Image 1: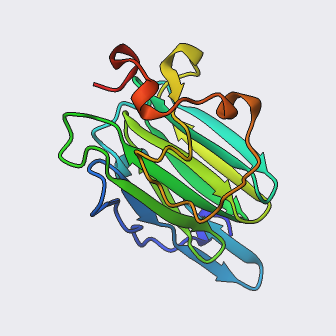
Image 2: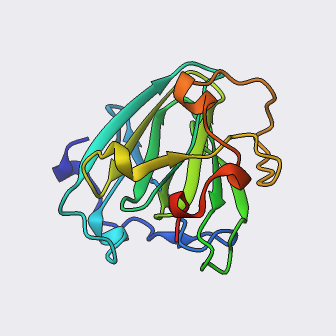
Length: 189
C-alpha cells in the first residue's frame, strides 16, 4: 500500500509493561488487501519523552537457535521490531533505583505477535531466534562500544526463563559475566 492508500486511523499508543517499569509494547497494525500490506512500525510520537535526534536504525539477521544478549546500555534506548521470523525477547531490570529492580520478562515478537518493544536504559535485553529471523531496531544514540555491557544470559541470580538450554552464542556473549561478578561501577545506576 502507498501512504495515500493508508487509512487515517491512529495506531495504538505504546502500552506499559506490567512487569518492568519503562518497557513498552506497541501493537503494530497491518492494513492488507489483494496488493499486499502496509504497517507503520515506529513513530517518534509513541515515545515523546525520548530525544530521537541521534536516531540510528539497525538490522540483525539470526539463524534459528541463536541467542543474542543480554546487553545493557547507559545512554541508549532500543526499539525493536521483527519483520520476519519469530524471536523470544528476554529482559531484566538492572536499575537499582527502579521499583522493578531484578524483575524479568520474556515475550515473543514477530510472526503472529506483531509487536514493537521499547527497552529503556538500564534494562538488559536479548533475544533468542525461535526461527530464522530478522530484527530491526532503532536506538536514540549512535553506536558507542563503551556504552554497552553484557550479563550472562543464563545467570542463575537473574533466573530469566528463556525456554532453551544450549543456544548458539557469539564469542562476545560467551564472555558475559554473571551479575554478581560485575563491579558496581560497570552496572546501571
